[in-house]
Image (cartoon, rainbow, N blue to C red; front, side, top):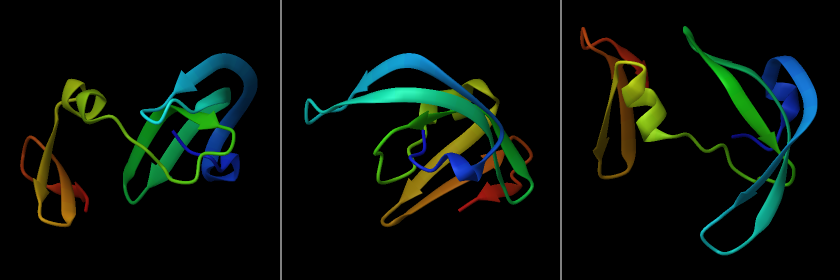
Length: 87
């Protein structure tokens, strides 16, 4: 999820519902698109009005055969061959 739809490629503006966060804040999902960073493209990333930070789902990465590891202040995402895709 991102709060900046200008970061999305092939953006489709469409109300898709709402998302509720842990602090009980509710925000509108106002579209989706592809998010490209480095040599990786994430498909169907939601645009959420007012979201101040980009959020990702560890489960979605794992479902896509990517490995996710955390160390102190860093998150690593790499493919099954061990190639780092994001840090």
